[in-house]
Image (cartoon, rainbow, N blue to C red; front, side, top):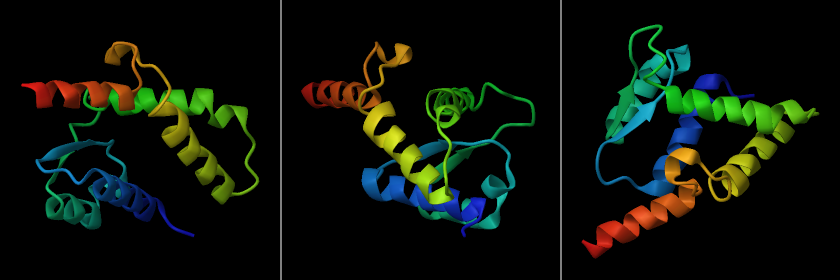
Amino acid sequence: MKGMKELVLDALLMAVWRRKPTSTVTVHSDQGSQYTSHDWQNFLKENNLQASLSRRGNCHDNADAESFFQLLKRERIKRHIYSTRDDARTDIVEYIEMFYNSKRRHSFNDLLSPVEYEKKFTERLVSV
């Protein structure tokens, strides 16, 4: 079984592989030990990523991440009883990929899903 550090590194690696960022990307996290480890810091540096880690108690720095996790818990996790960690992981990935990113409307995205919002943003950039 993987520890938290390995899980967050795997998730970030998957995001880097999928998105292939061409400029520096800020990664929001809290001050958990998995985000302050040498492995995490090295991975960020090697992949042109920048940590957004403010002082303890500054909730505004990661408000978007906190909002996401609150929604994940309310809309998905609290509605299920998982038999295994693998069942939980599969269900959460499905929620994120199949619903949250592609269908769930977000008020801060002009009531578009993140996928739709990013598509419109990219179209505007290309047209300039």
